[in-house]
Length: 178
Image (tube, rainbow, N blue to C red; front, side, top):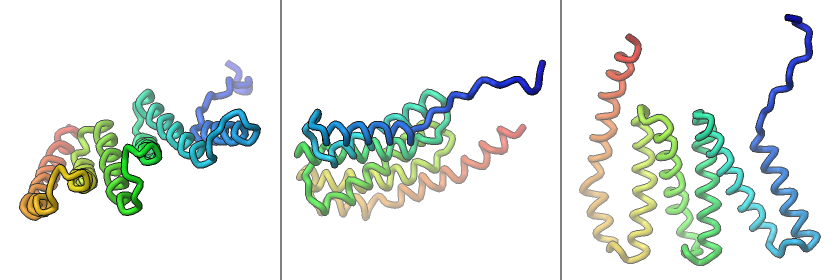
């Protein structure tokens, strides 16, 4: 076999390239009047498509590389569209709870890619729990005093889960080496 023969060019998918093409096409369509959207809507739609692409690439290749940031971008753009459609309150003080939910769900997605990494459940439960408790309080499903009671009473459960993860983690790693 000839070492100097031209090799087949490798096909490499670039999510950044897709992002730039979609963003440019969307903004061009808005400029020439094909679509009647705002530039911010095009921006967030492109962010969501980029997140979906990163997440899909992670799912189909089995590599978790883009799973976290892909899910962050996808969930964040979904939250923006839910706020613009008035399904979520567009109040600025709701953003920390929304970001907490986005991070909690993203850590949960990352955990699903590698369930052996039990430590990923800690930030998923903390962020997701804080965001969920806020929205349950905001939508009057739970009273603020109930939320405070549950947080003050049951926060040691997080320490127990963390400790179990620490105890189980090294034993699992030792067994896999043999």
